[in-house]
Image 1: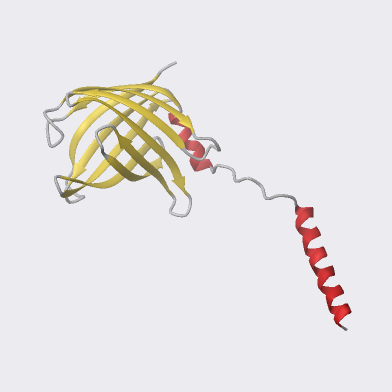
Image 2: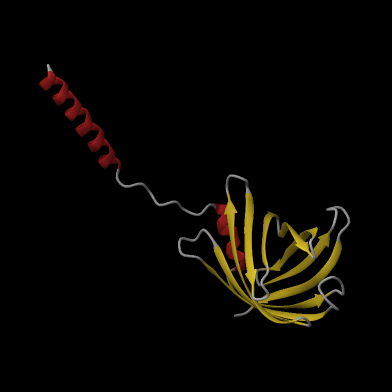
Length: 180
């Protein structure tokens, strides 16, 4: 009796193992179409625009130089940025992806001025909208960064902030062009 039980258990184990082997190794995940949509930003971009006077300083012209590439696997876009503005020169790094569970794009950034920020984004047609929350001087504020694709090689950008999420103040406007 014990031998028969042992034999049946071994046969069941063998059958389940051979079934798993017949299916082969699990397939590597593939980036969703929403992730592939981020491909618009891949490459080198030059930007310029104007900072409005306000909590970030006196305002004035700024320039950016961005180098954006896929992280291995193709699920995230890594962006390296250099900026020149009235506040001085700086560098930043951003990682952008897509959260399929929440159906939003994700944005995580750090910069050479010690700032870190996160935001979530959506895209409708040719317009990307990124929303975040931060603090300045201990006071909370909401941010909205909008990108409008003007062509495959240019986009406009605008950064707004609000203390209540209803009344928005434009802090920056500009345009970026893809470098060949």
